[in-house]
Image (cartoon, rainbow, N blue to C red; front, side, top):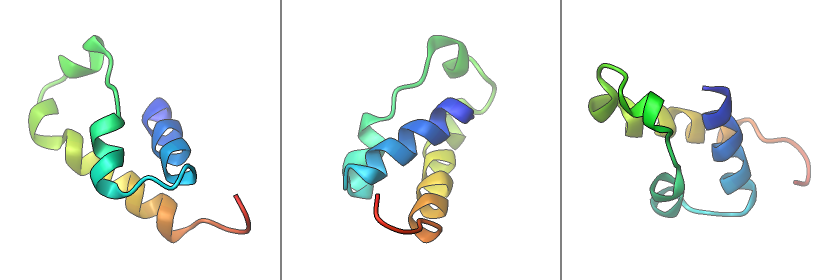
Length: 60
């Protein structure tokens, strides 16, 4: 989850919209094997994206 947070933060700082951002997130093969990955991966990214965009401070 730390890697996912860093990727979302990086892409948000680059100014990517949600439509661009979620397509550019890359998951490792190990994470893709987790139970419920297909159902929850976009929701996890969306949650982090909302957190990052709502809690940013100052100039990036």
